[in-house]
Each structure stands twice: as structure tokens, then as C-alpha cells.
Image (cartoon, rainbow, N blue to C red; front, side):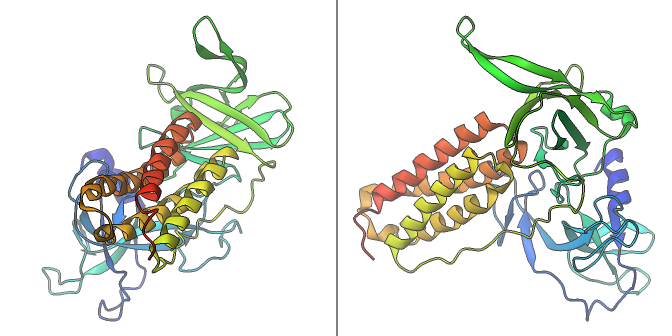
Length: 372
């Protein structure tokens, strides 16, 4: 861990106030997560489906914290005792350390050198908080560090809030390094065979230095626009597509309550039907611009596809390798859809989904004659 990461790590570690006995502490189960892609979480050891690194053991939990006052940490939903905002749920890693020895970070409880029991701590995980803080639409940038929230509070006004990888707002100095614009209309240029911006508006740091703002067309709801942005002047330009069905209200943060599990049917035909239904649901979400919701049906489709793996024996031997490859692509595609959904680039999302959809169609075709 480099010095910058160590500083961030130290700043976000929450030490449990009461040093309760570890024998009475209810520990979350051990999961396995990728060091490079913390959104990858599995129930057993293995390789990361994105980068192939070895997964590392971790105990994951959630706490409720204030979108403005991150020092607030509660075990249940409620209001911030400082500003009365609604608390939002964030992901944390539970581990054990010794007083004055921050380098000690163990997944299981133990004993310190002085014979005292280790104390538990909760550390906010990178990308562990995707709750909009200003009632807008939240995305993660392709650089896997920046996060951004677009808000449309009223006609003609677009605001862009920028955060680091722990959803901490960027400083005014960092905001001034960003160059971007809001585009409300583009057309196809036959000469260059590319899309060309027709109506675009520069993003500037607002008067109090807290976010970027652009005065744009007075779009009616639902309002669609996209942002072209460079996080550094000489950096790569990224695109983020925003759809606002209603005006953004800077109020209670929208809480992510976690991934809903799906019940796996015993019947192969029903599994395939559910898998196809999830694919249709993903298409509908993409059409209406609900990119932040893609991860739920994507991961449910992943679980359904994996359930078909044990049914390979029902297929002719010559078809099994192809089906196993399609299942693997659905699994990788689910993680990919989760990642690009967070990044908000419609074209990239559409391409990823089309590959995902084709893999599901292969499974549907392969199991079409299996009736059990």
C-alpha cells in the first residue's frame, strides 16, 4: 500500500467505540473478493472473473452513514444526528487490529502481543458507497477511482458532483482540473461518419467551489443529456449518459438495499424462461436509462446461468463445451454490465448487453429440447 492509499485508509477506518469481547461479536461470514475489483464478491476462493487475480478473504458488512458527515456510523437506517439527513447504506470490511498498530489487519479475531484481545474495526470499502448525495444519478468513471453524480434540479440547470473512490467530494482545487461540457443534442455527420455535438454547454466550478454547473437548454421531463469530461486537462475524455424522469431533489439519499436473491426453479425449462425474462428486463432498463439498476437482473441472470451448469448432463456430449462457454460468458457479462452500468456510457452499455444477450440466446437454444 503506497503512502497516499495508507493516508486514505487511515482516514476512513472506523474503530468500534466499545471494545466488546470478540467472543460475543456477531461476525459476518467470510467472503472472497478481488483486490483490484472490489465489486467482485464470491462465496468461495478462486480467481477474479475480470482480471484473473486470486480472490482474497474478507468479512463484509453494511453500516448506515450520513452522505455529508461520514463520521456518523449506525447499525440501522435513520437520520443523521448532525444535519437530520436520511442515512445511506455503505459497504464495509470487518477486520481486527491492535491499538497503535494499524499495520495489523486480520480477517479473524486474535490476541495482540501484549495479551489483549484484538479490537474490531470497520473500513469503508473502495466503491462501497454508490448512494447519490444530492438526489441525482450516480456513476463510476472508467478510471475506477472517480465517481460522479449528475443532477437536474430545475429547467436549464445541470450540476455535476465529483467524488473520489470512497465517495468523498473532490476539493475545489481538484474540480478546477476537470474539463467538461453537457451535450443536449447531437447529430450524425455524414462526412466524418461520427456523431457531432450540436448543443453543448461548458461545465464550470460553481461560486462556492463545491461542484460543476452548466446552464443548458430548458429541457422538458423526461430530460436526456450526456456529459463529455476529462478529469485532467491532458487526460482521456469520457462520456456519461443521464436520463432524468423528474427533477433532482437534494434531500434524502437514495439507499441501495442490496442485491435481491432469485429463487432457482427445479425445472430446466423454467430456469431458461427466467433467464430470458431477465434479459428482457435488462433491455427495458437500458432503454429508459436506468443504468444504475442493471446489476440486479444481471447478477440474477448469472445465478440462473450457473444453475444450468449442473444440467449439462442432459445435453448431447458434443454440445456441452459450447454451452459451458456460453455460461462462462454470461457470468463475465454480469460483472461487466455491473461495471459499465456504474460508468453510464450508453454505447458501451449497449455493446456489453448485446454480447450478454447473445450468450443467453445460445443457452435458450441449447436447452430448448430439455423438458425437465
